[in-house]
Image 1: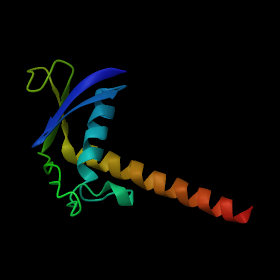
Image 2 (image 1 turned 30 degrees about the vertical axis):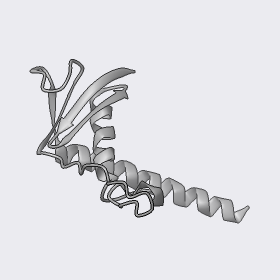
Image 3 (image 1 turned 90 degrees about the vertical axis):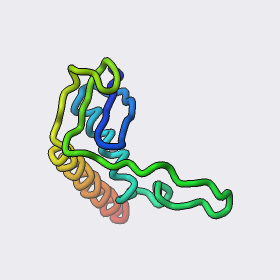
Image 4 (image 1 turned 120 degrees about the horizontal axis):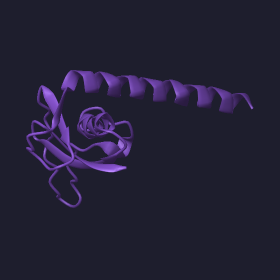
Amino acid sequence: MAKYYVQSGTLRTVVDASSQRDAALWAVHQAMQQVLPLEPSDRCGATDTVSGERPPRLRVLDKTVRVGERGFDASDMRSLPTMDVVGQWNDMVAALNRLESLLHCSGTAA
């Protein structure tokens, strides 16, 4: 796997992935987890009232997701439309939900 630098809006992350598109998909997943957590413990925006810790900085995406292997703001970064990557993320989450439903249905029949 290669190391990719991914940036869009306020999101800047380094991702190990098999392709630029996979790196962009994972970065969008990180941003989407802020608003649509898949697990109850994934609530990035919640404040921890016990420890008083501040929540992580909100990641806001731009119109494009830029991906490259040479660092942030490199001139040879590939630009992908954010909505295309979000659409792929949505398809992935929907497929995982269908798979989870099938596993739960087959688990109760046994």
